[in-house]
Amino acid sequence: MFSLRRPETLRKLSFRSLSNTAAATITVAQPVVDETIPTQKRATLATVVSPSASFVSKLSSTHFASFHNPPETETYKIKNEISHLIDTKKYDTLLRILIKWTSRKGETNWTETLTHNELTHILSKIISYQIGLITRAGTAKMVESSGIRTSSKLVHAHSVREKIRTVYANLLFTKAEGAHLYSKAHRSRLVTAFELSPNDYENLISMELNNGKLDLASKWFQRFEQQHPNGTHYKYMTSRLWLLKFQVYASASPALWKVESNDLYEVELNPRQSRLMSERGWLEIFNDFISNQAIASGNVHFVFDRQVLSAMLFSIAYSKNVEQLTKLIESNWGINSRGKMVAGFSKLDVGDPLYPDLNILKTIVVSMIFNKQYVSSMAYMNGFQEHYGIDLSKDNAKHFWDSIFRWCEIQTRFSEFRALQHFIQKTATTLLKPTDANEVALTLEEAQKSADFDYEGYLKFIGDLRNQRNKLIEELWKGYRECSPGFSARVYKTYLTLLSEDFDERRCYEYLSELALQYHLHDVSPNSFNRSMVNDRLTKISQLYERTMKLLIDAKGSNGDLGQIRAIISKWALNEGMRSKLDMWALSQEARFLQNANEKKTIMEQSEEEEDGFLGLMS
Image (cartoon, rainbow, N blue to C red; front, top):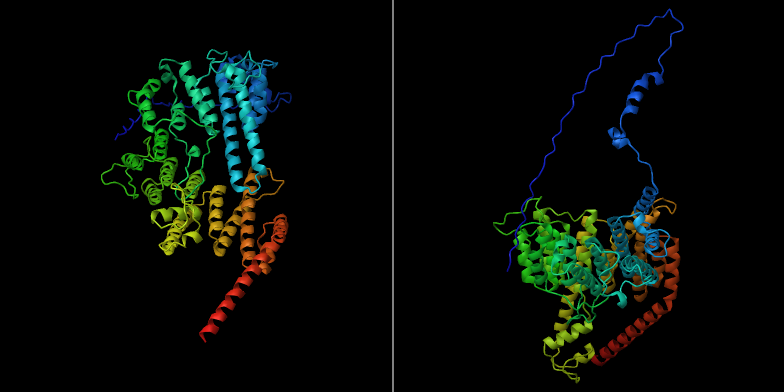
């Protein structure tokens, strides 16, 4: 057990005093005009302002600093161009420039234009862009059926990653043109022309971590400690480096969580691209944090905020310590596993650094779902909404729903074959088929030959698993639609998976209607200036819609309702292009549909003949 000390509220160190200068009143004397003098000169604009202009010209330019425009140097112009490239998200162009500037063969050296901090900041923007490419490629892979676009997106993401590595290799190994960042020849070199700053380490660790390269991310932590030996590296540990340390060593990043095969599902999930041999327990990293983070921050007590607490919760969740997880949630926010506020708990003020936000709720719910605590996860959702007013309908809530649906779909998966083996073992069914001691592999037909096989119990077991999965995702789908945080490909794809597993025509039409609404909400003219902003989303919606239409057509064809297919395509296709594609697909499946219909007809005829024969014997 351990308790968390709440950080002291920061005192305001200074107050701004404002004083208003009284405006002086000016009395303007009216000139006497002698109308008898025709040659009198009238006042012009130039003569009126000339005294003021004369006065202003005598003032130093510093009196008008906000209006003073310095001469535009070449460096100033280049920096403006770089800023424009960042604003317009032309990161590939920017990356090509940086490779040239950091290369020995380049005509221009980056130091002539940028400071170290500016270069690091630019690279952080490019790294965020590369991480976004990886994320979008993953979403495309989830939605697409062919995988062609996904492959091209991944190739681009990997290309950008290699170019970022090239920039850092150029910076570190100036005398070895073209050296790879991770070449063995330079692995032990600490003295380089370019000394990495803490922000550079943040860049490199974050990039490798988000690309699933945990071993490489840990290498940069090791180099960081070697660069600042004998524990002096703690002086340079930023808050972000501490968070990254939790994510790298203590599995505080759910995007990289491994899901092992279990009694009900044999497929493993492992998004990591490399093995990390030096994983540590969350408590070890936490003790390291509370002992040393004050060295860099200068605080007497360690500072605890939502980000650190979120990282801790994820780490504890991955270690499957549900008891510690619930205690930590209750001690900080007063909400128990039933979603109720604990009696006597003093609720946090809104301005408190630990006041829960959407990200904290996402952390809690994902952590519970990962540990198959489905009832508690829903209770926490309701409890934090009720007691802390967390809004799940905002645009930024889309990531919350993405994560919840993802882990619900993963953790409730099961295969009937694996479930059968589990049921046989749990019920100690006598096996008629010889098997290995460590493996039971029976089909349902084989299991039914055993006299003590509980067939009805097995059907109930499978029904309960399916019902749990369906109810949980259905409940989330209902909540998502009520909140309407915006379109999420992950959410819609998860519900489509549910439909494909347990098809229901009414739910299928409702789902198509929801997708059609999203399509028309995002559809804009091809000539519109913001078409590129919605193009990717429209593609995902169209792909999901087309797959759902194929699911519906397949259900109709399998049931022998071939005559309804053309009418469904004509009415429900989103556009002519989709209508044409679906017509062609339905035509290609027609032989299969007819074969299924003939087989069903034959089975029905045989059943009728057997029934007639039985009745004949009885008469």
